[in-house]
Length: 430
Length: 192
Image (tube, rainbow over all chains, first blue to last red; front, side, top):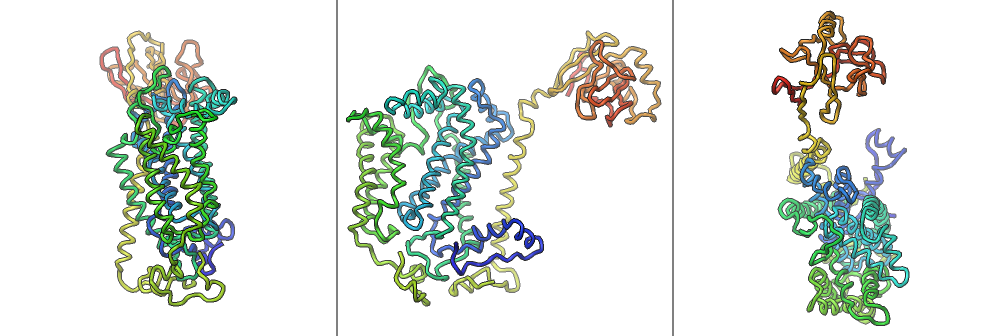
């Protein structure tokens, strides 16, 4: 579906006419990211991050396929082949640094993309499915990133694999057998490494499939926008190409500057030195933390220190998974008819002074040692995190009085809408 | 084409028909796409280069062979770049046979002198890789079929090489390849 004023694809040459009849790929591109896709004219740079996430997914697939050409998933040689890539393969160092830091940048843009969705309530009807698919993509990314981190078979790889599979060991009764089954052994070894490699290769393509559905679902209602007011007329939109291809291209240029600055000048800044020590099942590194992008969830995991009906370990695992899974219910927890946080004064306060500081604390504590005051801080932040989504958001969204919305996107941009569309759309849609 | 641009942006729209001359927008378009294109090409280079032989493979690309123990009429197989290398000391009869052949009658005309080093006419160093499709010809080891011309015989598709390892019969297009090598002493050759 698209807006009635969307431009129609008209093949100009004989070849494109022929192609359009047999396999209309140019038409698909034209309607998806070309001039045939009308997009709200007021998108700000927070709307760049979807394209950036797509870019980093493709970057990870390309560099990952290159690395897989040189890597051997065997516990005897995995560490050595990783060093072989770094030292002997032409440009191998660049491919590996591009891939390792590409994962971090993928998470940076995804977190900003999620932030955008949370602040502007992009998850609300009619875009719930886009949000749900997005959460699936995020879960797939986390699984893929974790298994990828195991592959170099360094100390952090090994102990990461042990600790994360140990999470499943917290499940009552069946936990231990499940952990042994996941690893194919009693500790991470060749069996685990091989299956992690196999899945690490598979999951990005599964992710790509879900991304296609995510974009497909997006193209049905069309993009949201910073006012949260739905598109009413042609003057509210501009064609995706050239307006947003140019804007996204500019944003991509900035993102690439930051990315390559890290790849070339700080390639190990986001990693751990311990991972350049080969896996040793008999010695755990002194300070074991996951990669930075798992820190908030790791902090939630460690925030549970006392047994209460269930063992503390199990509470931590439940809370960690629940902290993400509750996002699946977000479109129905937030009951406000207004989307954009820009017009929601009370929501905005809790967002900026509640959720964001709580997330910041969780981020910091997840990377800090498991001692005071970080454990206590994590506990407060974890409590707020769940309180925010499960209690505050549903209540605030029902009691607050939103600020007046602009009549239309055009009015929001130009401060007047010279030709309001009369008839079916006279009431401000939200 | 439907007019889909908002009226208020019309005068700035690049979608409207071009006026004469180069507009600022045209310049920016070309500059931006050129920068992106050059950047894209720069990315292609390492992506292609990474598949080329790596440093450790290249480091193994010279091989030293001690030829002192090879008797006349004997051959040994060495390994050069993970491929077989035939080193053969020719008997006087084999040298005479090779030199008796009119060069013009050969598919790949070369004399024995051209295929050996000066002063070492009896030392024939060739790759053990058939120039047809890459099988290892027989004839280097004791008792193997040396083919109709007393040199090497490739069992895959029946190429016969003579005592100077030149192609005489069968599908192979050229003689067995003589790699770059030199005598580092009277008894040692360095290949590659």
